Image 1 (cartoon, rainbow, N blue to C red):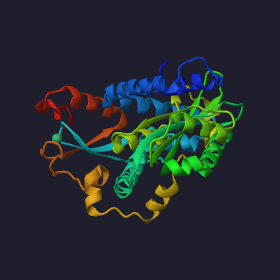
Image 2: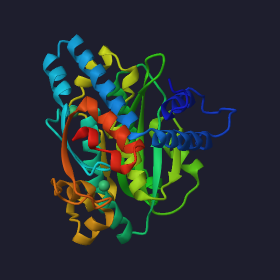
Image 3: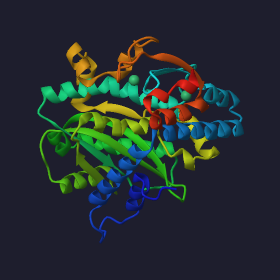
Length: 344
Ligand SMILES: [Zn+2]
Ligand SMILES: [Zn+2]
């Protein structure tokens, strides 16, 4: 098990008293964060595809155990047969036979997070153009209590609402997006974090914000803030919690039962002036093209089209989900002219 994940780091920090002798949390968190995403980037597509398969098997088993047979069938069917448009070297588009749309399904989660990125990235770009703001990634945490996931989520969202009503917040932030991240520690206690992309109006001392968060929560001053250099990367980082709401490896039957009860809980949203901006925002052709809406571009691709990466003609390979990791492996390791032959 990975000991250096973001969640374990934040978890241990939640336990610390406010007047800790330790150094401030932010630098350690940032360091881990970099290490973690670097590590994630290092994982190959084939490894990630295998992981998704394992996660789905695990979820389906848990669902059967709970008597949720229909849900298990849906998860098993989801993305089980694929039509892969490929030049042999690159994969331009994957069309699944069926999507279950279950919130914990890693395949559907990927689609959902891509949809969110395609929707909000143009709006963020335009918002930043029209306003003098700097995007920052803010992680808000709370002390842990004996409560269920729903109560934990409600508590942190209520605290954030109180924070937004405070003068300091209004003076320094012009809205943004939020997403929820759930983690659980070894003792089974829930830790819920809010990941915010905030549009900062002007610079401020981080200690002041800690004080504001303490005033809003009553007992937690722990937060982390870093400036976002590239808004596309920043958005991808926060929507990943929408596609991976929690660590499925530590997920048991009780967790699934509880999660099924959360059906209508929102995991992602907008707030403040950015929310109003999104209501009226229609991306112009330019703005759409500038962010490269890959999903809608890929949607137009069919067999015989040129591969967007190398211009070779695309062909349609039918395969099962279990064959996909192996196909990724081939595209990762074989010389271009050898690839695809086995699959024809
Ligand atoms: Zn699915
Ligand atoms: Zn290609």
